[in-house]
Each structure stands twice: as structure tokens, then as C-alpha cells.
Length: 341
Image (tube, rainbow, N blue to C red; front, top):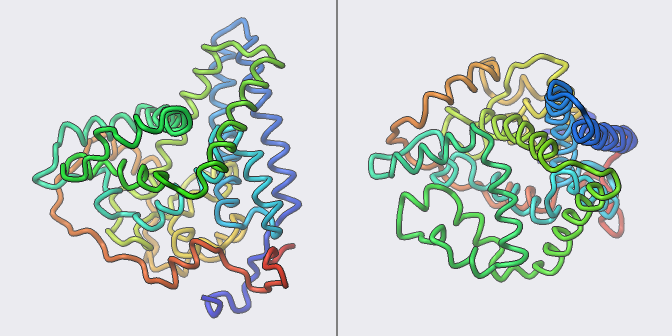
């Protein structure tokens, strides 16, 4: 993989990342505070829209942390990832395990949400698909966290584990649930989840948040976040590494999302920090086909489409290893640092 990087700076902007994280955290908290204490629903709506964008900034930083490219020191990288995870909220290790599984399963049957096979349950597929578009992805994520932390038996023995049922299997739920059953990191994962929910509870208490305005803010965030999570994959070729778009979007929005719309670049080069993704846009073989986010988003509302395309081949072992451990081009004795600015 190193020959792909010759002569190209992909150093981690650690100071900039920390500055963005602290600024976005303050703005995120301010949006929730304003929404909670506003006397007008117009102000609540404005605060919710602003929150939906800035919380995506934080998510993008957590996403880089999951790939070891938020900070060159692995321990600091993890600490920052944990801090940011409190705003989602999620357990950082839980998110990292889930996200890397996405990279391993992208565009396979378990992540083919915008399409269905002839023997799939179209109604179930449609419910799942429109649930995502209507902001249901984030709430279901929260339910999974609570079940995993407090009632794991209910999660691990649920109908979603019925892998003999192709319709249920193709929801993708089992592919993620099984990652956490008998996971050796369970105590750490649960402790991080408890931290994140405790962090949220502390903010609610100290800043006197109001339930419904805050819930509304998170629902608007869920609409924004959930739509992008699949718009950057929907209708792409069924290839695990290359099945994503570099979406064309307003530059201001792209910067707020920290280049998250350059998603094909990210899937091809997951070890590249957000600030350098633009350098690789012309090198990922998309032939200049970069649809707008809005064109894909509107197409998504047409519902799941019938397909007979086969699931793609698995990733090669070298790339799987790269996903799991990240790229360290200048390892030190303790293997804790990667290149930085």
C-alpha cells in the first residue's frame, strides 16, 4: 500500500482536528441549549438544523479516529474518539467495530439496502429503507446500544439473528449483532457506552435541557446523518472497496462534513485523513462520474429496486489487515505514532 503514497502528504492535522473538535463540541452544546430554552419553534428549528450539521462534523472526526487518523498518537486518538463519541452518543469501540465491519461488507448482500432480490421480502426491505430516510437509523442505533448494554440476551436471541431467513439476513442486522456476542472487549465496550450516556445525562442536568426540543434536534440530525450514510453508496457498483460515490455538493457543506462526501476515496484509501481526501479524487477510477448528493437522495425516495446482481467478492487479506490496524508509515518502537503535521 505504501507505493500508492509516494510523494503525497497524508500527515494527520492533529492540532486542527483538536481545534475543530472543541469548537464543534461547543457549538453542538449551544444548539441544544438554545433549542431547550427558546420561546419560539422557529428558533428551535434553526437550532436543530445547525445541530444536524455540526454534529455531523463531530461524527466525521470520530470516523477518522476509528481509522487511527484523528491523532498520530494511538492513545490520544482513542481518547479523542471517546470524547467525541459522547455527542453521538455511542461507545467509541462499538462504533469502530461496527464501522470496520461496514468496510468489510460494503455492497454485499447484508448492505444492499436500496435493492432486493426476487426471493426477498419487499415489504420488509421497504420498511427498512424508508425508516432510514425518515430518520429511523439513529434511534435504532440507540436501541441497539441500550439492549447490548443492559439486556444483551434480548438482542442476541432476537428474531434478527434468524440467519436461515434470507429476508431477515438481508437486513444486515445479524452481520453486526454477531460482532458483539462473546466479544472479548465487551467490558470496555460497555464502559464506553455508559460513559457516553452519562455524558449526555450530565449535559441535560447541568444545562437544563428540555426533552422534546433536544429529541427534535437529534431527529433532524438523524435525517441529515442517516441520509448521507447511504446516499454515498446507493446505486454504486457492487464492489466492496469501490462501491461508493464521490458526491458533488456545495463546498461549504462538504467542509462542514469534513470531506465525508469524498466517500469513494475514503473506501479506496481508508488510511488517509479527511483533509487530504481531495488529493485522490481523480485517482479512484470513477471516470469523473460524481452525482450530486441531492440527485441520489431524491432517487432513494423511489424505494428499493429489484436486482439480480451477485454479491461482490471478499476483500483481500492485506486490505483487511490494513483496515484493522491502520497505516503506520513511520512506526516507532511502541507502534503508537503515525505521521503528523
